[in-house]
Length: 186
Image (cartoon, rainbow, N blue to C red; front, side, top):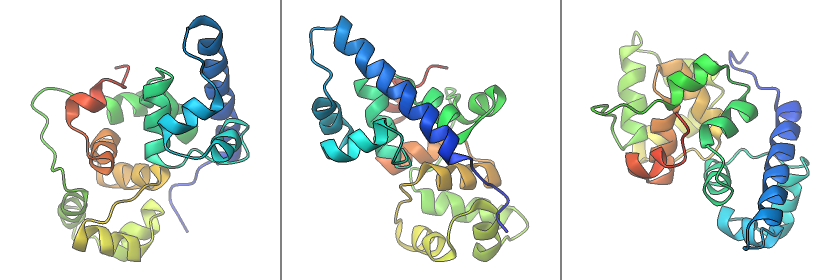
C-alpha cells in the first residue's frame, strides 16, 4: 500500500480551471494572443493535448508542463504544485523556499540514493512502496540518472527523503537555482 495518495481528479479540475482563467485573463489584457496554440508550444505539448489539460480531462503531471505554464502564464510553480498536489501552505514553504547557501546535488539519482541510505539503509523496494515510485524506476534513476517526469512521484520522493521538491524539479528540468527561482513566489 502506498503511503502517499493524491486526489488528482479534483485537483486536476481545480488546476485546469485556474490555468484556463489565467490564460483568458492574459488574452484580454495583453497584446500577445494567449491562444491555446501559443501556450501549448511554450509548454511543450500539442494543441490537442494542451486543450485536454486545460479542460481537466488530462492531468498536469509532467514537471515540464507545470514549468512551461508557470513561465508563459506567469503563474508561480509553487502555487501550481500546491493546487495539483493538494499541499498545505506549510508544505509549500518547506518544498519551495530556496535559501542562499543551500547545496543539493544536481544528480537526483545520487541524491536519492544517498538520502535513502541515510534513512536506516532503506531499500529501493521500501522507498518505492512509501513514495509511490516504481522500484525499477528508482533503480534506473540511481544507476544511470534517468529522470522522473511525474511531479507526483518527485513529491513522493521529496517528502519521504526530506528533500525540498524544488531540488528535484530543478534537476529534472536541468535548471540552475536562479532559473527556477524566477517562477517561485516565495
